[in-house]
Image (cartoon, rainbow, N blue to C red):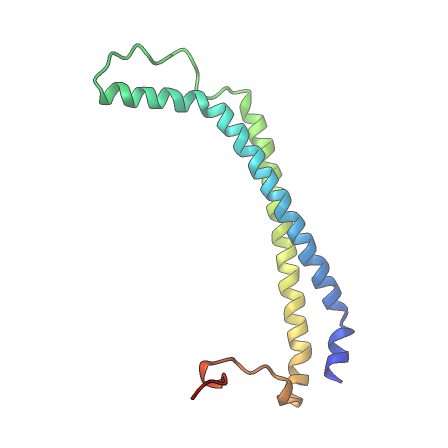
Length: 138
């Protein structure tokens, strides 16, 4: 029976597990990206403020005394923190890529496994749904 063969496939269980891991990985990636965004926003607030004041000063032809030129836009001590956050995001992305590659491989294996069965049972092959195949008033 075609359906009993489908239910007993060992790949289906692994595919479900991999999809679950992918969802968890996406949540980790979202959290890591949000953390990095908070860090960048906090560190770049000085630069943004100075840039806005400079634009206003140039646009309004004001005297450039309102910009604090002593503030540095990026502290060199922040770079390792940035690198850590970027490596964290990159690791999650690498894990997700591996999971997606494995899902694609297992899906292709399943498809090739059941393709001959579907050819033997043409009634089980899904028909494409079109407007002409829907019951209607006409």
